[in-house]
Length: 112
Length: 109
Image (cartoon, rainbow over all chains, first blue to last red; front, side, top):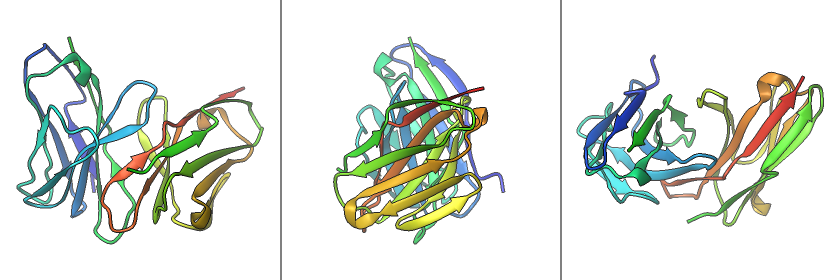
């Protein structure tokens, strides 16, 4: 199992551009999460999904969109990128009934 | 949401020393995890410990759910233990996890 994979590893965006961060897991986990980590801080939940077709907002959803068309994939969309979205983005997943999360390696995004 | 407080925020140790990191929650959680974020930014699962005590080599963790705190013990610290340690919790029947701000550990040779 590859676990949770994220692409790209690094990206630089100009203000106003858009992009999609990809997250895939091969563990057949129902739950998937997107977090952002600002420098020197803990992780904050952006969006999560409890299964294909079902998503919900976390603590900091503004400026982001998600979709979950398959169990494996949970892409995060940034529209109209802003400098405040400069951060490291982590995707995580867990199995229903087991609360242990597994994290991907992260995507480092810079908006200038 | 749940407030998660970690202490101390920073810790410097000499190699071989022991330490205790603490995680307090503002509300009851039925799930608690400890993570180590290494200097390359990778998040590594250390413990999934809703209650009780677990040990893994030089690391052990204790969660007292009724008193809303968890402790992470590091014994005989090594330079490879350096990094940031996070705890995260989730309330029962909710899907959102809340992270603390972390304890930054620097183990000097």
